[in-house]
Image (tube, rainbow, N blue to C red; front, side):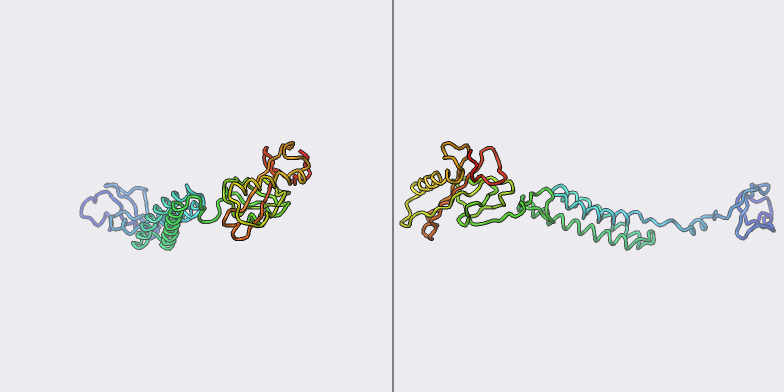
Length: 278
């Protein structure tokens, strides 16, 4: 249609450009009285506007995927990361389902990305729930891999029964004589350590003498063996000694050993204290 087809002066608007050199589909603006120099090939009517293809709305699906990945990374930062993983995972799930809905309606083109966002976010939520439950059950447990801040055992460390210790073995921790000791951790004496075994003595056979009596025997044994290892008597030395002795149950099972260890009250030692003369 053109303005000339009206029986009277046509209203202002866009009309097909019937000029000889006009490209196909071009329209020119009629101002109500004359043609203007304004031309366009863009649709102008409501029906034409509906035909314009809208840009895909892919943001939600992409965001869901990114949040799913972030959630799986955060879970390794314990315990704060566990909460963060759950929150990020839930948000990722919501955005993933919304993005998936857009793809089904034809408003987005990344339906598969949104689906992966849902999967990763759901996995992050599940891991955070499991990790939180285990952390509550055992606060000292580092879930989902080793905690980077957890201390590792020194090279050559070994856990042994206390009555299997031998002279020259070095221990990582000071043991309180009031506690029942079943096993201890040994390390090479070239590593920092708290105690060094300087004597292992077997008590005479017979009935269990009682706790007080056996403690007295253990002390006497360790004091007597001290000078031969350190080079000074216990009374002259600045070093201290500790000992382990069999309880009644161990005595009845045939255990007769007294284990004596020497330590520096100022802190850990590196190397042996044999012949320290101090």
